[in-house]
Amino acid sequence: MENKPLLAISQTALERARSFRASLANPTGVGVSVRVTGSADGEYSCRLSLDALSLAGSGDLVEHHGDLPIVVAADSVEKLRGATIDWREDPPRSGFIVVNPNKPPRPLALPVLPMSLPADSGGAPGPRTPPAAPAGNLETDLAQRVIAVLERDVNPAIAAHGGHAELVAIEDTTAYLRLGGGCVGCGMATVTLSQGIEVAIIEAVPEIHAIVDVTDHASGRNPYFEPAKK
Image (cartoon, rainbow, N blue to C red; front, side, top):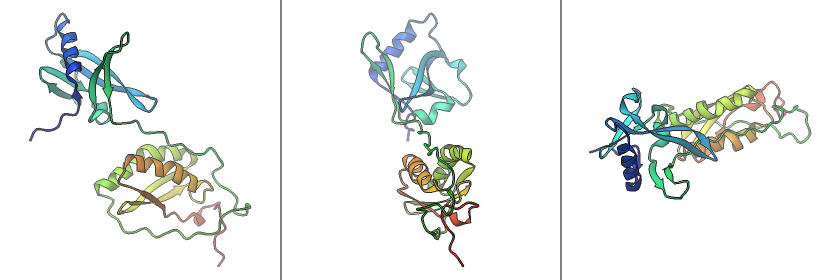
């Protein structure tokens, strides 16, 4: 069975690309190059150009749409998977557009607040015994995708506060996380988890519906609640 192409191209865009290529002095061996150059307003920005196929890198993906080769830069393949190249006729700014179902990851927004509150601060919650995490296989595809989100989007953000997060287990649609470093006993740990980490994971891995924190926050050097007295 033939593999599904990475990109689609509308008939109008295909005809335009062929027309532009035909106008070149030497169109032989020339194709359309596509690369993601950044992001703006929640969308990937793309650059399309006519380039010699000999300029394609070893990791670039080359697809043929009829007689038109399309070269997707290696670092843009996953960002453009399932996208469509189209032509917008809207003078005086007519041109190619890329309709892309993929969106750039949103930066993890963490509250700019003190990392911890004194144990004797007024209104501090009482001690909480962390829930037990089920035994889980972290080698599954679902677990690896959650781990990738933590490593790519979450940990670089909370590392600025001396914290990190790790996946402990997945059970059904729930991911169990353990926070470490500056996040242990942090007064903003609940906010960071619910408004930052949970949002990032659920948006990137929609199979996950809930996040459970199994961190023993009472073990932190400056916990935000009083540990139970023995």
